[in-house]
Amino acid sequence: MVIVLIFYKNGKWHICTEKVHYTQHGEEITQYVGSEGHDWWVDFEEKWEHTEIIEFIPVKPTAEQLQRLEEINELGIPDGFGTICSNYVREGIFPEDVNHPLRLLQLQKENELQGIELSEQEIENIEQGQQISELEIHLLMGGI
Image 1 (cartoon, one colour):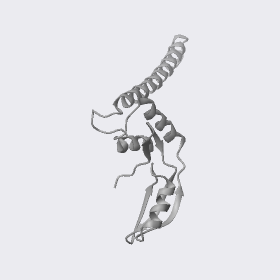
Image 2 (cartoon, helix red, strand yellow):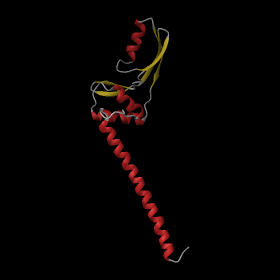
Image 3 (cartoon, rainbow, N blue to C red):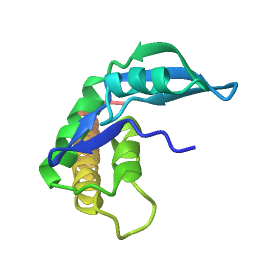
Image 4 (cartoon, rainbow, N blue to C red):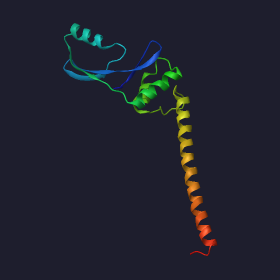
């Protein structure tokens, strides 16, 4: 079962603000309330005997999820990529294949990560250089 945290409406992606927990034909199901909205579920329950809503559960997205949602909206990714975009917004996961609509964002993130790693490596090299210099000074002064 695909878990979709976001939905596409009015030309952009939105994060779901609640889940619906219900029984249908005796089976318990929980899913995100998407573009259909809360009232659609209430109406659906009233029209169909085989469906009973147990509860609506508020969804509180993290700051990271909201940031990732903003990123995909900035890319202008169209409807039709809900699973890919939802996986990224929910957990920061990119698809494994090379050709996907989040590829530019993935490359940007990888470059940023490499830049951070290079900076940490440069700091480590500087610290090692200072240790060597201190040892050289100590040796020159007749140490050890």
